[in-house]
Length: 220
Image 1: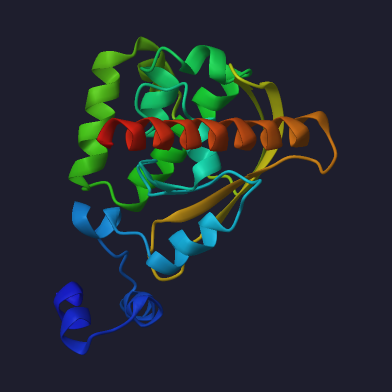
Image 2 (image 1 turned 45 degrees about the vertical axis):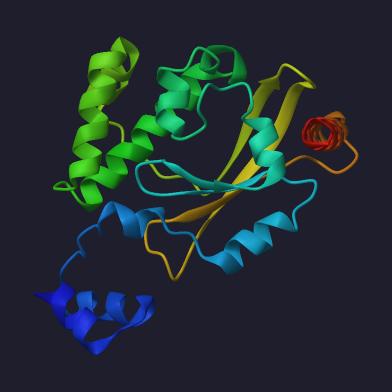
């Protein structure tokens, strides 16, 4: 009922959330098409982060958008589409996350937080069922029942092109898209990890340029 009222009144995200607070109701999750939409303005902002990986997540930890450096960072994965799949079912996960146990615990605890927010979300149920079948490790962490969301933490990642990266991540809520977060990975300025990120960006730019040259020559 409140969803219909919100649409009829053409409320923006803040106004809609205020309506739900007044009614003391938790808003239901939107359909998948709404969750998949990322603001063009946010995409433009992410593209300005030349030396910082940036990407957008939804509550189920689907990666909705990446800037160029984030795409390069996640290039070892078969499909960089969901952090949970990347941790638990992608072959690259075990070597990419230097502290795999921490990454596994954190992603599952974040998913449990999402389930608490909207236990009837079909996408959440589907993802939990999928991972429970595919990964005994996921089942183990899921049964632990930890619930935790993080907005600031340290990560140690290992990329085959540039080695170990000691990074800090920060997550920011996207105000006009409830459930979405902008995630930014940063290295200490001047540190070996900072230099490694710059090298990764340079390697990616070189490969992109070489690919464009090959494509151009094939059309001549």
